Length: 446
Image (tube, one colour):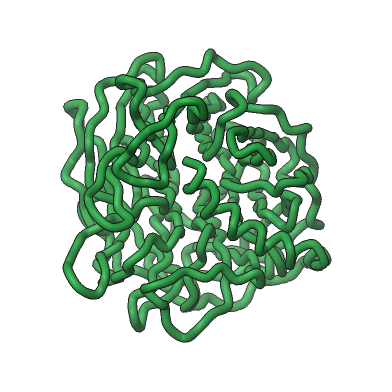
């Protein structure tokens, strides 16, 4: 576990050194540029007018630097947005996970409160239509050694789960979703909610398995009673070892988007976007590749995927690929998890966005907001190494009926961006040096 944490903290240290002297991105209000690529999304997604970004605000400052930043909201559930992250103490056996909330679209944030014990990391959140807030995180036992197949995990680690029905003020007792015999290593969890508010799936990467180089196995449990109980864990597929998966609803059922892993011999392993959708019998449908990018990489690119579903049942799936000739961020759509649209390019990016996950959310007008980290780099991806540039920035896009529209620059310097939308607007959060920053994002309807 400590070695895994070190990988992320090494990148954060490089960013902190460069970010300490960086000023805040200038506040901006303006119209977006023209659509970069036309989409066939139908008239249900309104065209976007003027886009306004609020002033960047400091959510919190942490001496050791935050990591694993995430955000969640639900436009059907009201105006609340949430953000969570992990900080590490000088003692490598201590990790804290924090939660904060905004009720005004990201202009102001509550005082952060702790989730879990003093060994909690890698949080993920989900908000149901009725406002119920679900949280998961991994807790490791620093006093017990574990000889896992993946050497990154040196201590038993359990994925924990808790529920709040009053906007995070009070929580159910945290419990392990799949305790097993205690000799498990469950990392990079994700939550998927069905559209009925009762179906729930929680997944994680099983580090006690060893499919091959920089690979793991996705395991998941399902609940039909809102998390009161869970079924037995089920193995879904091999996955890239630390590219965060994303939960969503497809055809009303919980679904998981993750970066698959397939050993194809010399030249690296295929690391394509893969979708798993729950079936009606308590199991899972066969996984399907969203698009065969032919992205071969010898190491994990540390780039998580983003996904969300609008009120009309269209799911938006977004990812970064380093495939030759296709380097950059893309999105595709699906209605049933069986067939997928041709991918649409969001932007070109050759460099690996290490520690930069994609986030996708849907606002009250059914517009799609996407944020990701832009990384300057070489003209091609080096499949033998990963280099985290300190000169990363936060970018975003809106997808509507006329295509893809770049947002004004969200942050000129920052990493690990996340975003979410509520009934009153969207907001982006990111790590900048030792601080977590936030910015409100609003779009008028034409």
